[in-house]
Structures are given as structure tokens and as C-alpha cells.
Image (cartoon, rainbow, N blue to C red; front, side, top):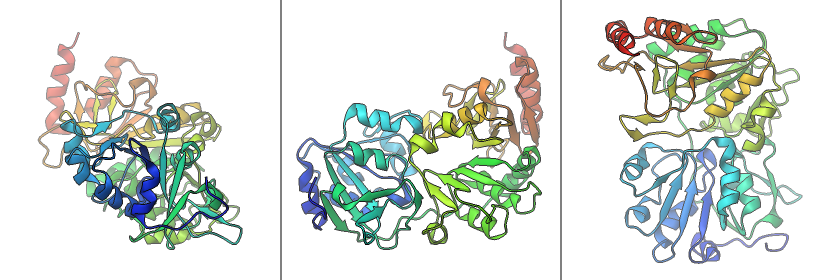
Length: 418
């Protein structure tokens, strides 16, 4: 670690601190150090580096080096740009709950942590802004810490502040803050959201992810009479609207949104900047089931690729290809299991957009959430309540919310299963 203020370098000079054979860990999402990732792509040849990260947005600027064999890449969340590389064995996927990432990094060791940070305040502190998840842990574990300074990054409350003395080098970001544009909810997603809102208790704390269905749920809350709604998990642009409309409490709202990651556009970033209503915490808090489980009326709402007729959930694999990750879904389901008045909801369309394939299926190979940890499955055709039901009763309930064109085949398969 350098002195009180780390030197500002160009990205290539900063990466020379890594040394050969280093394990580099980059922050995720809207907090990704994109300028440094571009530099890694150019400098990786002959260095023997391994790069690890979670979810990244955009085009993954280091993939040329991965394809050329100059850089090994490991991730616990597969996005479209790396799906083929994972399928071909060129990049490595780690199936891991979000709450376990810090422990996995500690076990493997971190040579270099690469994070996006704000400019310093007058005391020399900086904020990690939208991303604390594993970034803070990576910084604490690393022998070399490099910060990419972004003047547009929001200063967030919670547990995101790091002092200049922690860094060995700083670089000026050449890129805009990464942004996540919300998916426009479909008509099917809106119908699913209506069913979900009908399940919710008053004054709930909701955990939702990102995508069409979660965003439809947030939009539907604007007209629901649920009292005060709080959130944990991913924070998105749509939550800003709820805050402005008073659905999220403005009076005494400190920590009304507790999140490991902010995933949105500049609208969310401006809202988050020095706003005590939103707290960003590392996964040791934000994905900790024992901590979150003390929250009453915690409702986990997670989407799925497939659900089988016993209630097993696959949120990761499509036609044998890894297209996502475990993420925080199992952590939040675990937390809702511990919560007084908690509820565990899985949501998905009944079929693919063209209707050719049912997403309620006879069986699945990859299980992200076990059937014993699901209270309700929701499609556009309704709600299947599973908790306390036998396997046969679950089959009947799930087939009833499958797409009508696939119900007979599902029933026949269920009857044929011993």
C-alpha cells in the first residue's frame, strides 16, 4: 500500500503493478472499471493473468485476449457476450451463491483488485458508488488495489467508503459510467405482476431482480394499496418512481432500499447520490440470509427459465447452455424462509414467446432453487401455491398454470412417472 494519496497513472502503468501470473478481480455491473478492462485486453499477452468478475454490462472489452488464450477468465454470472466462451470451455463458470463470493476469493487469493470509485471528499475518502457486492471484499483481500476514478459515479451511503490510503494506484476513467437499461415489460409480464401483487402482505420488504417481470412488478406497485414498501436486492430505475410517488416511504426512509448493486441509468445514479434512503452494502450484509431473515414480511421474487412439476427451479441453464448464474436468488429465498410472514415466489411465463415450448416442465437437470424452498409459482395463468402440498398436489397446481396447449402433455408425463 502506498502513502496517504496513491499516484495517478495511465492504465498500462497501473497494471504493471500486477506482476506476472496475477489473479485480478474486477468490480461488476455499473461499478465495473471499464478503462482498466480495456487495458487488460491490450496488455495480457505473456503475463499469465487470470481475471475474475461477476455480472458485467456491455461488450466485455477484454474478450479478444481471452479468445487468443492470453487471459484466463472466470465468472460466477454468465451474460450473453461470454456464453459461447463458457460453452466452449474457453472461459470458466463458477456456480456460486452471491453470499459465498467473498469466501471463494479469500480461498483462492486476490493479487489485484480493480474497482470504480468517486473522486475523494475533503478527508480523502471515496465511494464505490453503485457496487459493493464483492468489490469491498476484493479490495481488503488484494495485495495491489487500483481505483478507476469516475467523476459521475454516485456517492452512496451504506458501506461503500474507502480511503485513498488503501490504493496503490489511481487512473482517470476514459469511459462513461456503465448503465443498465430496463427491459420494457411485456403484456405477459404485466399479467404475472398483477398476480404477484395480489399475494403480497401489507408493508412488505421486497427482493426483486432485473428483467421484464421484476420491472413489471415494481410498476404494478404504484397502484397497489400495500402501505409502505421497502426493497432489498438489486435497485433499479423503476424504484425512483415509487419513491417519488410515496410508495417507498420518504419519511424516515433511511435504508428503505438496501442493495448490493445499483443496476440502472443516470436517473438511478442521480437519485442514489448522497441519498440516505438508499444504502449499498457488500454481500456479507446484503446477501446474508441470517441478517435479512430478521426483516419481517420479506418477500423474495425471483424469475426462472424452467420450473418442473414438483417445484424445482432452474434459473441458469437454457437448452444445456449456461446463460446466467446462481446469483443471490438462493440467498434471498433462504432469507425469506427465516422471515416472520415471509414469502418465496418464483415467476415465469408459461411458455416461450412463440408458444412452442412449455416453461413448466416434467423435470429439470439443473436445480437453482430446490422445491422445498418455494411457496408459490406464478405465470400469466395464475398462482400455484406449493408449500405444504404433496408431490401430486404440486403437479396438479403447476399444470393448472401452464400454457393450455401444454397441459395435457404435462399431465400425461406426470401420470407416467412412478
